[in-house]
Image (cartoon, rainbow, N blue to C red; front, side, top):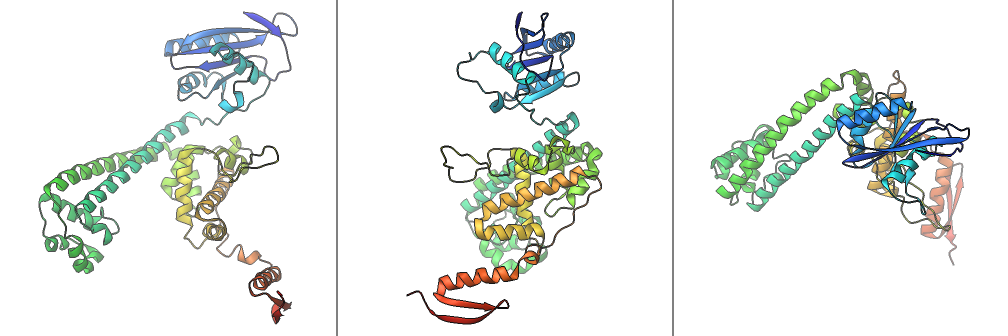
Amino acid sequence: MDEVEEHERLFERVAGIDIAKSEVKVCVRVPGSRVGYRRQEVRTFPAVTAELLALGDWLRIEQVQLVVMEATGTYWKPVFYALEDDFECWLLNAKQVKHLPGRPKTDREDAIWLAKVAERGMARPSFVPPKPIRHLRDLTRYRRSLTQERTREKQRVQGVLEDAQVKLSSVISDIHGASGRAMLEAMIAGQRNPRELAQLARGSMRGKKDVLIEALRGHFSDHHAFICRMMLDNIDRLSVQIDALTRQIEQAIAPYQPQVEQLDEVTGIGPIAAQDIVAEIGVDMSRFATASHLVSWARFCPQTTQSGGKQPRGGATGKGNPWLGAALGEIASSARRTPTFLGARYRRLARRRGAKRALVATAHSVLIIIWHLLSDPEAHYQDLGPDHYDSRINTDRKTRQLARHLEALTGQKITIEDGKITAIGPDYST
């Protein structure tokens, strides 16, 4: 137990926890017996439930106000969850508390450093959603994982058909729809006659029987049938699990249904995307001071990195929440073809900056809309319309700009009066 000289601080009683897989080092810093000094004590606790409860008892005896820990893989979760109900807990980004040159790098010193960083207000806590949102997040993330796995299985079926020279996907947009699935099941059962298989077409596909017959001519064998059978069974199994997860998610998200309905009004956001967004960022936007803070946290804004007066090429946004990023990417992709403000924004940017940058910028706009909607329970989304940008164009300025471009292309002097081209002069480039 040591007493050290006191420095300026924001918290009187803090605890810093350095977390490993099997144990945690805990440093408690509280006022010392002498004025101007701090008392600190470091203890080691095994990372098991009984010892974490003992850790909580010790922190209560010391009347700790703030507990801080570094985000270390997933090992921080049991410690954070065991203490969050009784203490104010902060999860710190590793970049904010990184090892400094000249400071010994041990678990004990790391715990002391975390406590010092916290008591002096040198770091900000990372966003950790409340328990109901965390439970919802577990469900939505697993649903997305299973959905991605089902998509991969469907792609594997397509690969087997290509190997058998069956060009079914060239005629049917979704080979796992009613018509495609019926033909697949028949081929697996032993039917190889293209004409008989084409008779299984349903709906509008019945008008493409001749094309289907040619597409179904291949060398689909029992070997391909065995593999396809396993793949289709796996797809069906995954579909059942996804449906079960969706039902569980609907129950878990019931308290946040008003927010889901708010988000569902936005172009490109459906019920599933709204559920994913609520699970990732919660519904309490007070954690993000402004919409820009949310966009920055999600890493959907370019970062500036400059050194020696030079700035590297590119505007990388950095790595953010991949689950939120996937949902926003799907939303932006859905909105880009719509006759709406978001669709117009995407097309406007894609012409100048390319499709990828336009998608990120559109997702950026979606996040800003989401922040404003969730910040006000009474707010409703109102689309600005696809002509939002065109209605704000200064026609005279645009005319002059286009005239300059025309002059550069033709080498002729353009004269404009009253917003109209009245004369085109001779070539003056020489």
